[in-house]
Length: 535
Ligand code: PMP
Image (cartoon, rainbow, N blue to C red; front, side):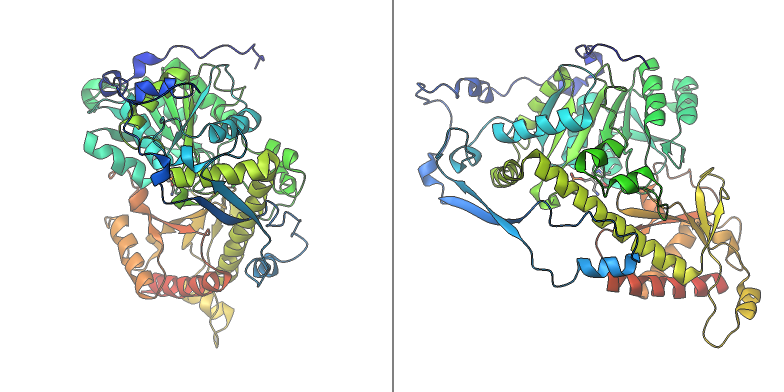
């Protein structure tokens, strides 16, 4: 790759949907450009006077940025490490207040935050987000533009209707986030899955799909939009590195495809499981800048999206709280303008309470503080992942083997053998159930999920024509009745017909439960699994 001088984004407005082209500026919102003038007497907008807002000020106690340790816990067992997280630690807090009226010119105020405004949100929040994008994602072109939205669910919904007409198809990973599919289905916009491996979407399969697209047979034109979750992918947990992103990007340039990068788990990159020399695992205990530069880059980065064909979706759901309902787009200015038009007639700006509290928190913490907070979170999620995987290994006496499953070539896979029960010798137990595979998994390096591939072919009496989803459902019900809820794989399929005849899947989230619940859940899971595979 030759580093090129940064240019403006190329004009990709031929991708806009009919709906998006038809949007005019909301007439009243068009007046907003005059609002900043100090001498202006506005009698135009239907705004309530701020004296009638019942909140005189809002304030809250927020944790300090270094609340979660980034110390290297690898010398201790991850078990003892996690115990500390939930101990009776006294939380250190800092107070955040938003007054109704400003004491200083640049203050965030309720007068503004709770008033009608433009769909671009609070200027102080915009400023912070711009700094974040510039420093962390380092976009490849000059006129990249950010725009607030109310979380990535809203982001994707706005992006897909801005780009796709009813009847069109979009490209996605073979397994994907169900709400992304449920949101497009009523518009008659349907997904086309691309096979995945341990880095997510496969570039050879993507090229094949686009090169061999048969409009007649498929019933629609070749897709021009891709929806992808490249880091800690939901549900499979896999993460795509720089090289694969560049391969995919180049194919998208060749076939003129817009990439919508839905990336909620970007800052939950934690490195390999049980590999002390992994660069990300090491950097997460180092200074924040080393940690940031160890992370898989966004598609926006200067070595990738030089044309401005990526709409990146960021959300504060996983880094602040889902209830904040706050996130942002980063994309070329033409798309940003159309997305803004869509926003001003639907959500308008995100809620003023959420925006002002998050903006005040971030400007109090400052960029360095927020990065430190994110790094602490990554270490937390690493401990959680390690705890769950350690517990599964212990429960199932898992052996490590390399590259044994077909669709996840070259991955590290754990096959499970049966655990000896009390009163039986290990040899007898092995004879009873053999060392057959019950499930396989690829230890995730980011995100919140472990994805299990079930080996239902090893269930005694298994009929080859039995649907994996039927087996999945049977096991799901048994687990639920025993008190453990996990996500059935079928929910995440981009295509109802694509499941292989013997595979079923489950998604386990390690983001929420306490260590006691993990321990209990894994025990129950072990018991139910052994029973199921013995039947
Ligand atoms: N996209 C993906 C891939 C997700 O996993 C999730 C949360 N589960 C979302 C979007 C939803 O994000 P938000 O809360 O920002 O709408």
